[in-house]
Image 1 (tube, rainbow, N blue to C red):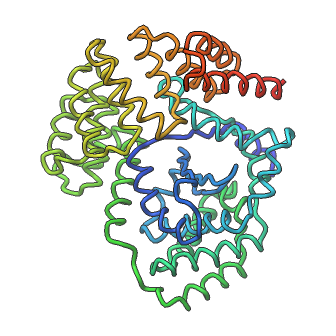
Image 2 (cartoon, rainbow, N blue to C red):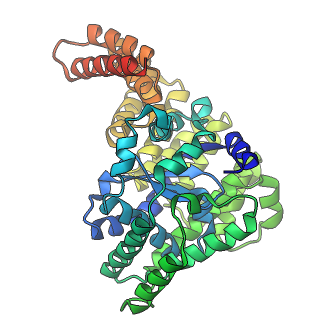
Image 3 (tube, one colour):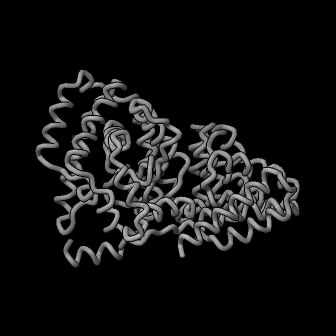
Length: 435
């Protein structure tokens, strides 16, 4: 790697993001592929990386990482499904054994553990949301995650097999590789990170294109609903990641395209121009009154702009229409707690208990749960929730202290006391290993 490029890499950072809608839509496309590969859908974690480069990889077990750059670059759901199917081929093919072994080697800078730890930190929002893995470690991750040419070809062939089982064209995968090649030429000074971990060779591409052309489903499009899902993913990401003023100049209020309207309303929230945001989000909700993600966005904007009491109702409706979205439940509970209304404390606790049961890696949920228990003067459970949070974000000494406190305060033999003991022992063991 040239010195100038290595220095550039050291200045970069990798940040993970959480979004209920984007995660849900990506999983909707991925779940049938996992099933076709013989994998348990719930066992595969889909993790979004805020990075404009085109990349995707699997690491640390059944964890599939997707750059936002990839989500924005694909032109069709078939291309995104092709990428997911290829990465699923690596999981199903057992290509992670080498990576899993490397996790135990401290000289690899524990790169994957760092990435996975960032997920929990990022769920904390605010300052905790700045979950950063330094870019210098990306050099290590390239070495750790680089597949052989044989493994790449095997994953390609597996991807076609999985998509054939779904009666969906696999043309999207070679189309995405064409996008990668064009992007690689555009970058010039550095290779696209995808190329480092997924070597492209003429033989590999030729073999893939031959297999795709022979598939009986070469012209079979994915379900139309996926087109709408991808459009919303891309509109939302453009709204969050692009400069708000640029987005607002590019998209006029008169636009009737849903993805553009979504990008525009998110840009208004980020600017922030709350009066105009409310006008346009209410217009969207008039057209889509039961849309949980538009309701979530409205609640989030109101909460973050000190209209706490007003934020509760849109969040309530969002949970009503998407009851299995733990991230939205955390938003609702956060709004309830922020009202400081003691009448809402018990409901906030119940809401957060559901959320942490479904998504135990969300540090913000545990933080809010600790506050809610504290408001109810249940110090034992507040300490346990704090211990869970500190364990997730890697603050092992604090996790040990809070777990020890919870264990003393909670009834002997109760589920909470037993969990506190587990955290106390685990945090101590991890702290000793770190030393």
